Image (cartoon, rainbow, N blue to C red; front, side):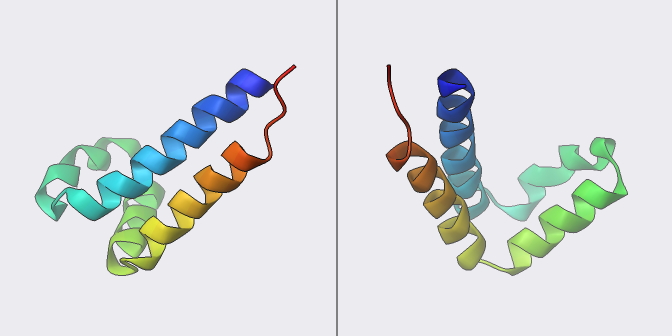
Length: 69
């Protein structure tokens, strides 16, 4: 469970940073994943900078609530 949480933390922060830094033309490969993914990504890109802030906050919350045994 801890490894899954750590991977999800890094993935959510990386996705939030990618939404902020990468231009729209670099997201063309998402078309292969289907229409729902394209619509979600289009919504996230139109909702900038709040989508990046949300993903970074989710990653930070996962990082802060972890318990290492």
